[in-house]
Image 1 (cartoon, one colour):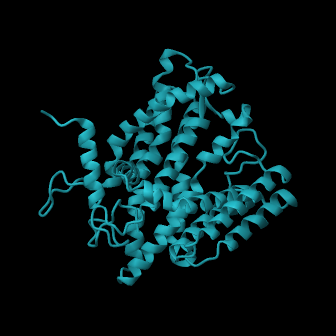
Image 2 (cartoon, rainbow, N blue to C red):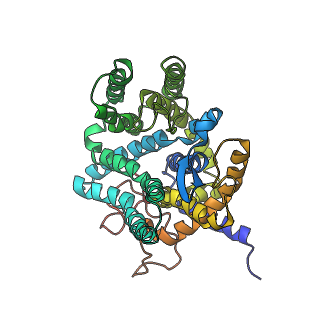
Length: 411
């Protein structure tokens, strides 16, 4: 008699839990998974594709329903991702240097897993864009689709640049990039001076703040909860003050038509909000470690970490594929209609499982670009888990002559 599915899942989860080294800080992986899933959920909730006059255009419920701004407080989790990235890269580089691994080999291993899935996304959308042009799709619609599909790439470029700069910024005090953001915003919004491109200085400087906080975490500077509480309370107070008295938007993501976007490029309010998020993340470490002792929870987190870039890169495509596939059925609420009321919000919540299902199809089709092909060579056993392997700190990635890492991304 075949084993029940639930029992099989639990057995595999326990096996994965047993394979995971005791030295692994599972809270780091849990924070990364929460950050990735937060971004995905946020985009699905605040990005609408409205069908009008044979074209598709983007709209945001935050424009007509400003009381939904708290959604952006929960789902704009990029600061947590950069916090974890700085922590992992700093530890990884220090470990590689101690073993005599050259910087170029370490960086190649880090960036290979990060950027490898991009090729599949670019290839598919090159073919799709060509097909849409040949079939007479309006240029406005094509521009909308490509902008959404390729928008995750800006994050990868910034993250890759900060990763490459890890040896230079690993001991940088976060107050320095924070001061840069402060001065840029004073010039932009206080004195209304400076060139048009000045705000984009905040793109690397703003995300360097949580990245260097992650590096400080790796150096052991957040052993006590007091520092984390200071970040949480100070960042929260500063963000509230900036929104209430300095004219910054309450939404932590861009809103069409708004004079200021907190995210594009990052503003001082986005950075102080990120400080609060980092403080909360550091405070939750112990609880997350306890939660990750449950095999099923740890297996879910491990799966997200193993395919984090695939999930991140393809979630907008899943949204657009669902929207396009349903167009022949007419303008469906929550999918093709203007996000202007509670009815749209309720309908969009009902569509989330469909988006997740389509994303799962994309994951099945393209995860090999991130994880690499299965190898069944000498000494390997077919069916063996590729999620957890030898864990000895960060070094060259699997298949490059060094010890592979658990979950591929970790230090």
